Length: 188
Image (cartoon, rainbow, N blue to C red; front, top):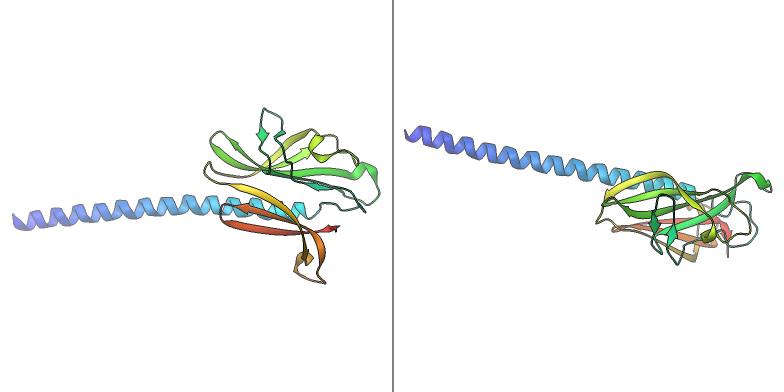
């Protein structure tokens, strides 16, 4: 009888241990998926942002809106939660002007990093006055996640090589991670 009680206690302990391991494993997998999605989205955002100002000799071709930005489908972006830019895909060719941006929005209890596009991109328009739409979602994160953007002028080295010069520098902060982007097409 004592042996049966001891074996039952061991079995209960093993089942409790198994449950704890499975719970930890599932939580770790979900966190890893969220981190992967965040880093993939931010890597793509860094690559796209490096186009900012290409083909322009001057002007405001990158902007962090200081007021709320209205998008399609009744989505709004809070101030400092987006960065907008314009560039030419081919220098001095008007029909190749492209306006893009990235934004962090809280939608359906999720924080989403989204890629924006402007329907009618113009060289002389203020970027925050254009009509912006969601192009695609780059990452979906829990609602507690925070993504913000900061634009400064700093000495930086584009792509980590060459001579350092004064350029606009975009810093994307996601939770506790910072992703600096030297905008080499915009000189100060």
